[in-house]
Length: 269
Image (cartoon, rainbow, N blue to C red; front, side):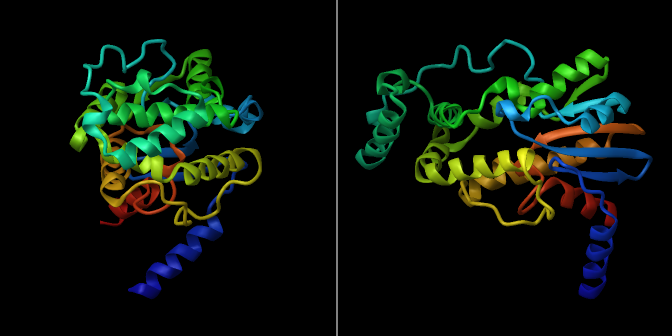
């Protein structure tokens, strides 16, 4: 059985089409043809415009499928209820680490004092990406959404911003572990961003099982990556026949428990 699976992987590698961007093609039963694109939510100027061949795939698609439609102007983080002061929620050690990062980014702690830990983590990550030269308007999913509107291609969501916000708000201890992981893996996250940018500017990965720097604890990886991939797998299997461009965060397409492997496992059942 192990030999059979190895042979299948060799055959798949031989006949898998390579693209100049991070992507994989998967055909589900029932004539559902997926072009899975490894999206980055913030990009550099060099990542725009999108490759012509990718835009052609979008023109020919029955729908563009994204994690959430981020082309609108409304923020899902408006009107968050205030949290207790940081000194009541973080130990002196973690406050010190947070202050170090905030000073590096020239951000005052007062602006974060009543924000939930998961929101602080997201703001820190977004600010780090901006300091590395990334901008939301060059994000792959954002560019695809704009192009889909231009080409009048239908847009579908894998989960939507409301569901994403619910996942974050349901994290234990207001997402304290996410903040701690962000502070602990601060430099690893910067390197990971640079790796993903290189996938679009230089050379996409060849193997969806490739090893990537770890920036999540295992419990967080299960919630933020694996469980969502499982839900998306079910969502994609429920699609009607057609051709779809699916833009999912690049980390969902590579590494442990990635979306393509889950789709292939479900087909093999």
